[in-house]
Image (tube, rainbow, N blue to C red; front, side):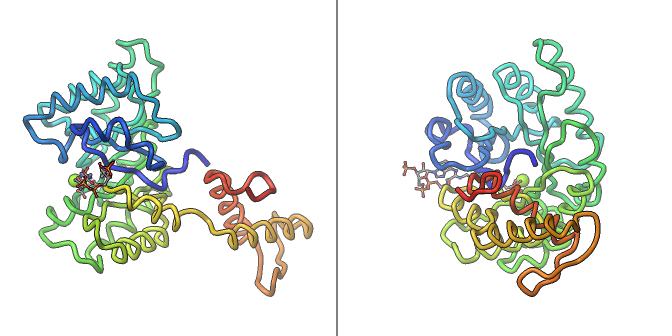
Length: 297
Ligand SMILES: CC(C)(COP(=O)(O)OP(=O)(O)OC[C@H]1O[C@@H](n2cnc3c(N)ncnc32)[C@H](O)[C@@H]1OP(=O)(O)O)[C@@H](O)C(=O)NCCC(=O)NCCSC(=O)C[C@@](O)(CC(=O)O)C(=O)O
Ligand SMILES: [Mg+2]
């Protein structure tokens, strides 16, 4: 299992304070935004600011992404040409609708990496799926380049382009969410659920976080520091889960059923899928720093 991507904290790249302090909230990933959160007149200044920040700031254990502007806009290509030499190695491509969109960014990255003597393929892409056509094409998008590490869902633009409204219940998002998760799994990349805009509605937020976790997302985009620990509490295995997973894996090893066979552990059937799920929980717990190869931390 690669990096944990339970949380991605959006920070407008035009806000110097966020660029200097956002890592103190300890999200797994920071996502500096040059797209919708930045006013048209601030786009170039925000790009320069993030380029300087990338050169001098230590973001500690946070994986840093920048959401660039669309390559169809006057800013997208410049974002890539300035930020990659400044050290950016992860970018979110907004409004991704087809394999061709990813291939266009892939080719530009090939060129920029070569021009600056950066190892080919170093820059990874997260594709944002935010339209019905994007959802429909999400498998070809996720498979379009070996640079793609994750696909994310953007429900605000999705409901806009679907011609509906986003509800607290979220039924209008179910098919899109499930499709994105399944296609991410098929492609072997992470899937990141959308933002929840009502910062004051902790209960509504938790319902969404649990839904995203149950559907199989790897994590969730956040817009406010207060959302981070809530997401981590759902996307990190509990100590009970860790303990029962250890028990399952140990019992399975003792009974030698890792290639087939069935036993009971605490009255519940354990076979290959149960063992594999238990191993996944231990791997997540290890990534979260609460379990270390046979020991709880
Ligand atoms: C909403 C608000 C202005 C409120 O700020 P306020 O400062 O009034 O809030 P306060 O509560 O006072 O903050 C308390 C303390 O936390 C600090 N603090 C707050 N937020 C922080 C933060 N984000 N990062 C670091 N630090 C932060 C703050 O500096 C203060 O620090 P201190 O003074 O020291 O106590 C702020 O949060 C914010 O800008 N959020 C991000 C908004 C954004 O990026 N939107 C675009 C992405 S969505 C999109 O585009 C849709 C999408 O594309 C999505 C997709 O594709 O996934 C689609 O289609 O669905
Ligand atoms: Mg959007």
